[in-house]
Image 1 (cartoon, helix red, strand yellow):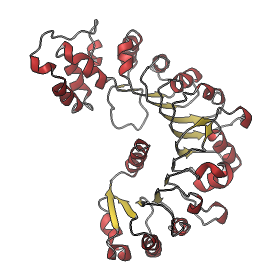
Image 2 (cartoon, one colour; image 1 turned 60 degrees about the vertical axis):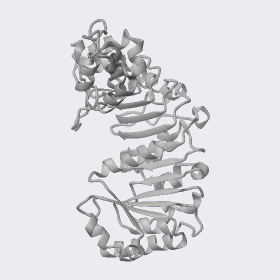
Image 3 (cartoon, one colour; image 1 turned 180 degrees about the vertical axis):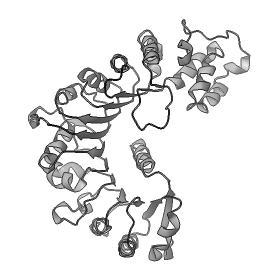
Image 4 (cartoon, helix red, strand yellow; image 1 turned 90 degrees about the horizontal axis):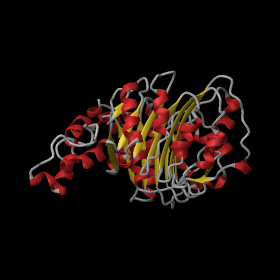
Length: 405
């Protein structure tokens, strides 16, 4: 069973002697980089020669994923989904600080009463000296796991996906959060009889982050909307926020007007909006003129185009914005939608011909979209980005953007 993790009982390779060429570091690096997403091949490489073991294991253990969510279609590199292999992994990691130093990203799934959960908790509470990313999926709060996951001194990115019937246990985890944290993704759905806990502003940890992604911040009804958003954001200092991504069911208009402090957007350079209100409620309109440093605006056309047209109209003619991306997904624009967008985008381009206008489309939808923007096509303005998965396009934008920070 240890061989399944690239280990023997003494962590020694099967072969002790190897041709000199196998020990040339540049050749070894090129061989293993190409196998980074193939755990089976990395396992084999770790047993080739003693000079290969550590390097192969550094790729194999770079990202470990423990547990499996319903709906997961793909097995990730070193994904452990059985209690037996999870226990082997725990024993290997707990007894080897060298293996733990290889780990850069950990994904944990704690759902239901799965027998693997006990071992997942033990693994999550180990020390990982070089951990950069932590992804956590839970349907109830495990305080020890949460605290251990966010306190690693090298942690940069936190993805927290929760399905909760209560907020209890979330308030107390943040004071131990690593000061190195820079990128936060929050996804959760609250259901059941939610207890509205007190989180006084005076006691907030004030974790300064430059990148925030909110997706599916669900709530039972409008009376809990303000509380849910406020609770999600209360630990964070957003005065230096440079990247903001608002996903499905997380309403930027409401955050803009009711939750976020007025200065939160002043430093924002990259804004991604995948959820729009259905109507042009004047109180929730998004005024781009309030973002003087915005360089990259991405909006998903998932609802009537009038909302996006109104937002585009708020861009001052001398604004420094450089790139505008429109992502087309389930919503089927009308002819009037296309005409309004064509005019609004052309107006923005005319004021500054150095601006980039990019349409993100699926390959089969590109001809329809292309034919619907005659004025932009006439100016040879349009750039295209094709991706057949809307969710992949959102993730790719976020990944590429935070890598630029």
